[in-house]
Amino acid sequence: VMRSADAFWAAFRGGSHVVEGVPDAVLDTMVENLAFAGTIADIDKQVEKLRRFEAVGLGAIALRLYADPAESIRLIRERVVPALA
Image (tube, rainbow, N blue to C red; front, side):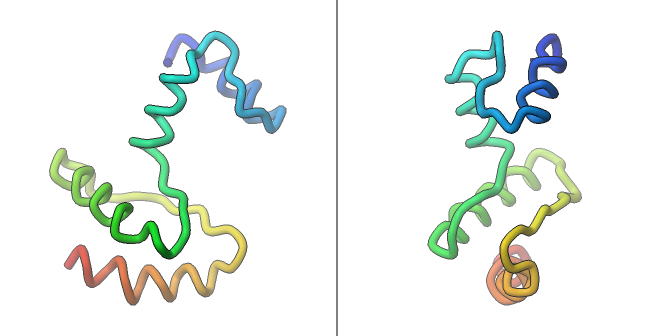
C-alpha cells in the first residue's frame, strides 16, 4: 500500500474509487478494517470495530461528519460513548 501512495492520492484527487495497481480485494479489506461508514443500523458494528482498535492500542480517532453533523454528534453521544464507557 505504501508503495502505491501516489496512486491513492490520484484516486482521491480524481474522486475515483479505482486505485491503479492496488487490487480490489486490498481496497475492500482497507475499507472494512480502517473506515467507519454506515447508517444508524450499523452503530453496533462500528462500536465493535472501535473496541477492536482499542484492544490493539488505538487511543484516539478523527471523525469526518457529513450530511447532518449535529445529528451525528447526538447519536455518538447517546449511542457510541455509553457503549464504550
